[in-house]
Length: 138
Image (cartoon, helix red, strand yellow):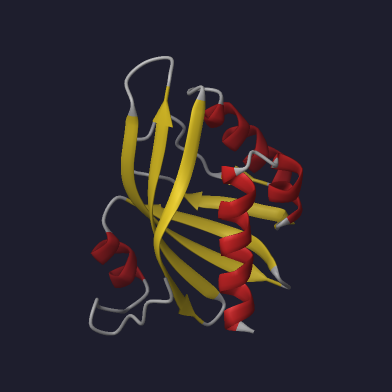
């Protein structure tokens, strides 16, 4: 099942990057939660439920004229996928090139839980792993 989870996360990036928010929404469990936002981020969360999560993402997306999220690596960890990503945005203010790591937990083939980290090593540590333990499926 875990490769399927990587495929779901990859599909979420693809939907985001072509601005297909309906497809993006459908990859999320109705009870999706952002349980751990980025430390210091203005929208602290948690955000509970698919519609609350989608409102957050749609609001963030409005900040720039164009944006993409580029997965640098995807690591399969059973029901979780660790994604190192760079979020690029241009227009309406300074350009954005933000590195972050997201731990996605999947349930029944849908994204159920988001946990955000500024540092890749911190995300792995939260899962009891080190960079040497992690196998990358980029």
